[in-house]
Image (cartoon, rainbow, N blue to C red; front, side, top):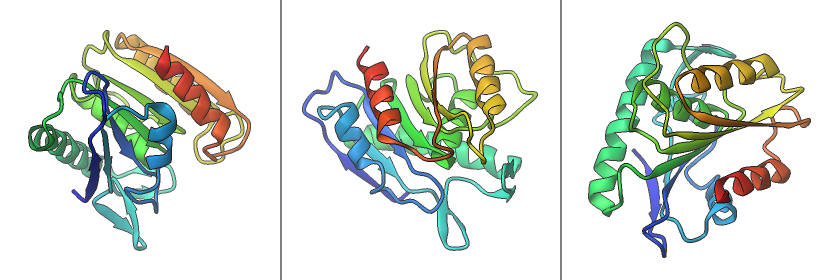
Length: 199
């Protein structure tokens, strides 16, 4: 997978896994990593799927309707890439925190839904529920921040509430932060995620 790896100053920090939104690249969220933890390793990945020449992490059938088969395949592909990257760049595989926006947040949530130890935690900005009707692994040692919009046209408020409930029912500790800026990722939301992370 096309990516950037920047080695941090402090290997006791988690490696920040950056996952962009539709049409983004591995450059998009680098500034967020600086705000969240400037001493951490950064692994920023570009999605392997193209939709009208825009990179994404998995296919969709329509707005808000995921191609579930492709989602499962791409989630496995990303999880295996993380195994390889941890070995190649010599960071702790069990110490990865995802920072995802929109489509990137969805694949990060999917990692947690499918693989117990894929992520230690996640900052999910405007995610949706990746899959319904499946048993989640035990996530009792995981911490998740969800940044949501009360008026998000792509990701309705009840979607954020449902994701929070599903993760909590699997044992995760979840903080849900509301903004009122539609589907936009605002600086106040990033700062709220950074404050959550530092606690």
